Image: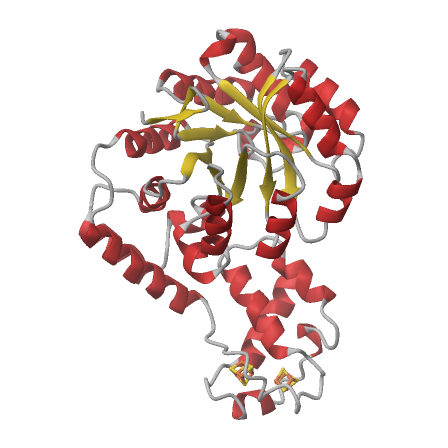
Length: 368
Ligand code: SF4
Ligand code: SF4
């Protein structure tokens, strides 16, 4: 296992996220399968992972209690680090949340504590609720060792939040797809300029990068038949020097072992590997997305009043695995995909030849 120094301590570069623990009978929404989940945590701990990430809302509020029982109660407290978070939408009373978390996690201090999921629509609540001052006081009292935040905010809001506290680290979504096709590269550079280490979440994009399209998979498999497709994503993010630790929400012992092997391997991605990965990424992106340039030639004639390029932008995000983009389509002003009458006027005016009516039908079916 690879380790990296953090303020005089040392933590593993692979961290275990506890939001995808095995559930009873593998059913969505079912309680944590304690016996199997404990095996996964034991495997992670025994293989040298020392960073365990949880949060108030994970597993319907039961992840922290599980981590308390499966990890904290069974191992020396100084042999691992716990990270947990304050999520204002899960529970707005940060004092109550913090005290309850210490109880759930069976500890008198938290190693890493984060303001959870700063987004464009939550940032103002976090900035005004008083939680930053309170958490800073808890750090001064020794009950929090390191204070940071996790962000899904646009770069401008990331800068605002960075300026609002005395942070020691930032957690962001970072992977080779978002690096090129979203704002991850810019976010990485903003945090790097601020001199802070990065904790990575969604390195495999919620599993989207565990299997690409057949063409893209073939490129990667031809280059390294013995590497899993997911491991390419882990290897890529591991190669970034500003990255302190990479979180993976592991469900099975096999996933733990695959990730441990990746983070124990001596060799990093070579220049040839990186070139192959870029080709696979671009092939994958081209196959799953529509090449809308946002020229808006199509919008004037649409009898349904649909903001077609805005819908297509969200469609591409849905195809890349975004969980929230489908809901955003329903919030757009003007017509919705279900209003499309299939007249085809947009197709005739599109220089890219995009079959917009088919996409509107697909989105309409997705929305139910
Ligand atoms: S096919 Fe649908 S999206 Fe395209 S112009 Fe007609 S109503 Fe609008
Ligand atoms: S005309 Fe085609 S490329 Fe231009 S905004 Fe409409 S869908 Fe996108």
